[in-house]
Length: 409
Image (cartoon, rainbow, N blue to C red; front, side, top):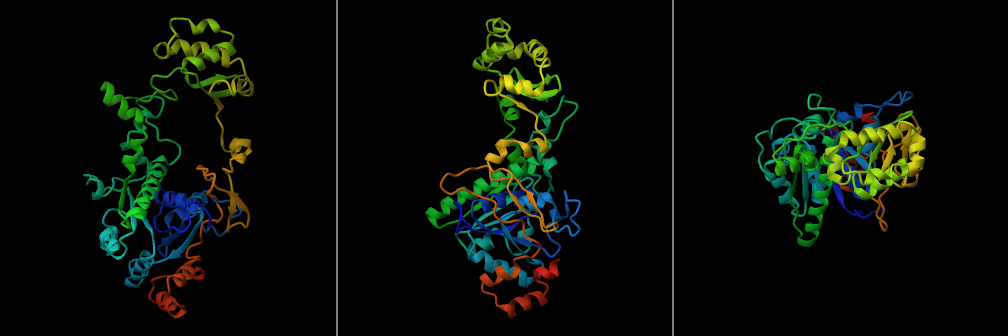
């Protein structure tokens, strides 16, 4: 692997989405990430979408994207032999990431204190619904959590949707991927400190905390004005126009809340007098009189098609068509930015797209070079690197501590 994190070794004990998303970000930038699965595998393997001609279904699309660029091994950590193998891997690792329930690693004898005693440089990152005791012991520490729980308790659902009676979960798994982003950031920060001091540390990330951290409207509005904000559809508190507006054949998003943008919009609409109209003369006035703003804007936009609005306003005022997957795959921006690289899909023999690397480093760019691993695909390879010979691997298989790739299929 090339990339800024080449040489960094990561033991990945994660499953579902939040943890694998975190470690995929590290892998994209060159870290050697070894995904450790139980013999039954990460349950996300069994979650679609699956291609219609994929008869074997080794994993679905979400697993494939969240686990690209990794190698995969099988260890049954319920066995003493497998736990000893993991300790051997930790001895030469820079990072371990896990998202088990609180206390699981301690019950396995693999808690942070145990691992740090063996490898003081180790950065140990955990992602849990409500965090671990390291960052402050939550009364909900032992509660299980999914994305929708994090979005609900982190405040995002309270401001998402058409109105206060219809709270809506964001359509993607932000309750998983946002914690994954913060976990990756925290891991890199801790790695930097370990490089300076030779001492690792525990990186404690809570899914709920992470969602709250990006729900800025919730915290800022209540802290400043003492008001709990409520959903207002696609609008943004204090900004107008900032919403979806009607076109002749659909809708577009439009943002012109500040005077320079509002002035350009008024010019294109042929309504320059609106710039000095006292109802719309300031950013705040446009928000207070937003109903009138949207009545005027919609009366103009609905006379044009989406394509015409893009032609009239694109590059002048923040505006965008609402793009679905088909449109994204056809759009030149995402091709130019390499945001839809392809990897082999082992169940079909075809290549399928995964999301690309959004962080573009000029000198050491990240890249997607490897599909997600089959269950146990690299078990023998990784164990040999760790010093196990064929006889030792045979012994581990006989003890039920691991399985080879052929036995996992």
